[in-house]
Length: 175
Image (cartoon, rainbow, N blue to C red):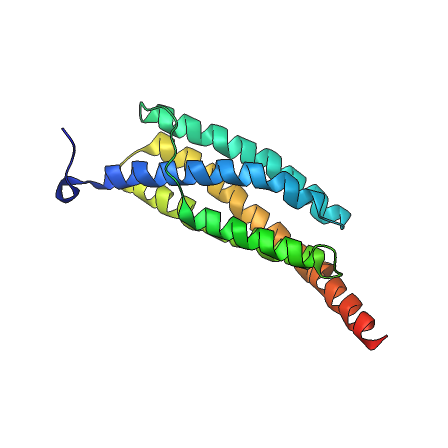
């Protein structure tokens, strides 16, 4: 017997959101190699490659969360991540070959990170509310890694990725 919408619980919403982020992480896993292939700056390429490996770990950790719930990993289509990744593709196709290419990649990657931080933060709060300590621990580990990835991207942008693109673009325009 199906549950009506008036009977849905926080745990039902939690499972739906879990399926959403599982879809998103798998979509990100597919998208990252293409993004990395367009990176020019060695530190950015290294950081995104490291995050690709972390993302593989995020997918595994989510499978562990499903296991804690006694369920098989499953996805529900996530329109939000599809839109964010599509926008990233557009930025890459328009700017990757330009001096601002790596700055555009950082811009696109940070949109993904902020989405993930939002989702994992919410899932973590709900896991705590639902008294699912082992699940909360797994989600917290991933949330911490997402924050670190975002911080690395910010530091790269502040240390030169954005300035290099702006300086080179300005020099090209002046020539």
